[in-house]
Image (cartoon, rainbow, N blue to C red; front, side, top):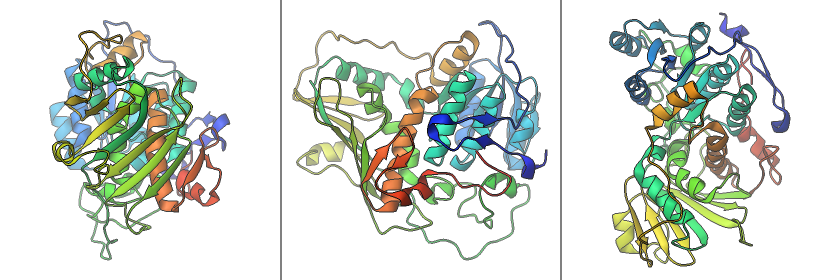
Length: 429
């Protein structure tokens, strides 16, 4: 396939997105619950390798592997010698026996890989965040709905027992009506100066394929393979990386979807590098029975809620966390622990959520049975869009009034440049 001719066609408006083919669309293979899926993997190292090994544990067939780095590909091929190997994901998608595809690449490749995988009739698991820009996220969610595929985003913490217990407590009214939420993560990326020297591309790295739809940028070890989250060109920094993990908890517990507005503060803005710290204040529509919008505040890079919200002892104990402030009490949580404050834990809860069979296994089983996963793209799309909107608010320096239906900041036309994706010639959505 000629990459310059590999074209997606997506309608311009969020409400009427349509897809035109770029790979052969095929009728999905009829699979029973006792059959094994044939799964292909786009990306096979680092986080992608964890996905590969977790899916392999479910007992499904690993039949195709793709990575732009030949050394990573060779390692994975040694583990799965019967799988076909590729350096170009478009060739993997053209492999006819695939039932499902895992996309675990840097953020800037997610949309072009996931949309064509879905359009080709394959089920899709995609790492978080769902894409690099809000418009790409919407394109993926529309493609999933249009093609009726089983999907799951890589927020594996969602399958842990702790998140389920927290959601049960919130939804059982243990802390009363939730009035506000604070989410903070002790992680930082960015704050870097753009490199001025560009060495030769290392042997075995297909750098042009690593760039994919992006405008041509000289190779630098400052972005390939580990540091790309520091740069707007490829990712969304700490908010893009961890927003889908930590904001997942209030989204699930409170049934959130799209915010009404977003306003951010952070260090001096840089056109190239993501902010090492950030505070984003979102407003969501009033919860059921409420009258006032729900405020949710995000912090990263060492920032935390003020002492009148999170006292010193709690701030020292919970370096990262989610705080629900309710009319009866408070609830604080991270990935593996939670604590009620000002209210006793009841002996019985009104809402009970069964433990997960495993985040990756949820997806593989649903692919075979037609069931529903807990982090399908119709749920994780709005979650990702919310995280990315915080970055857009920071880059524009304005409080954005958000029209989610049309993907527009109604009071800031300049936000469009950060909301909409921009691809080099030969690539489009």
